[in-house]
Image (cartoon, rainbow, N blue to C red; front, top):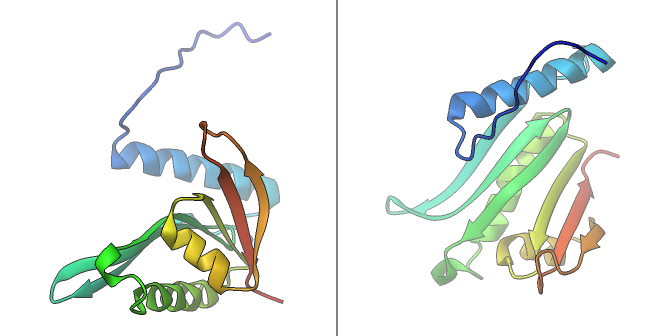
Length: 149
């Protein structure tokens, strides 16, 4: 057992710098385990759809180890079914291809339209798991899409 004294604190609203520090430490650990040539530093990327200077849709993702993790996606209800979701998806796929991503991963509750749009309009998207009543009465879904053959 380690005799060193340490403390663990809870930060409920971490600063951008604290999030970056955590993300980089995870990356450094991965780089030590599997080799830095295999792991690029993780980075966040934001995709925005705009009309006349007004943001009408967007997607936030994190690129890590050739995987693009979708954090959130949305389209203003007034613009749904107008091609905004399709345009965002195409931009995301182009970015993923340019960055040699092998997978796209997302999690979503059944009531989020943007992620469900992806799952219902792309036959290559698979539901790889779900947790029911998480929290009650909602179901949380886990999705993946293989990007490289």
